[in-house]
Length: 255
Image 1: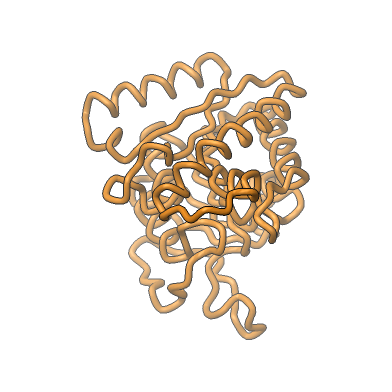
Image 2 (image 1 turned 60 degrees about the vertical axis):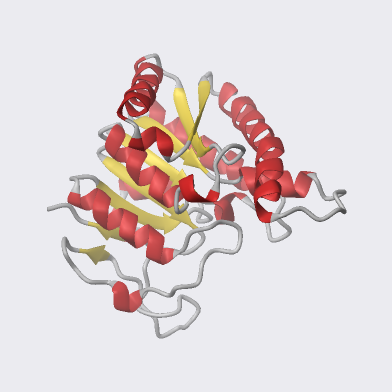
């Protein structure tokens, strides 16, 4: 299968905002295993802004939100990609960075160029690692979050499956911290899940479960199966592919 995997900021960062290299390495191991099984993988990876923020703790003067995002992402993206490069190189896997903006999906020529870039990378065994280009994006042209980006990339590459990794197991009937809340195992086409969704967003990223559910529903409508799962669980990717029924997750079913 061709699988798009989105890794959220809360999966890749520790509580202090620094990059969780151990978790990142575990996910790289699993992606390498999936590729060895014959799957094509596209990664949509968050973590650049958080990575840059932890690297630039010495900054003391005030910056507005746009300046902060540009500065932290510029430094953090380089750090993030260097980590991926070194980790995947141990498996003999070449990686390529794809930085994009919402504008690239709105303009037909830009979209075709981006689509061609991803196709060439996949055809030549290069693992695409996609992220929003926060250094040049402005508020009006930003993706809602990388959940939105992952859905667009999954459709652009005709992926069979989209896996969205968060720091919780999926969609719950209430607050995930409430022992009375239950994990929603499947969402059928057209099912209204708005009553289950809390409106608060993740601490490290811009998204939340509302965004993930909306993206998942649109991707499923386009014929792409979607799984929302906890990226901090051990061997989560391998478990989702080998024994989904025994693995905590929410699956959005296609028509």
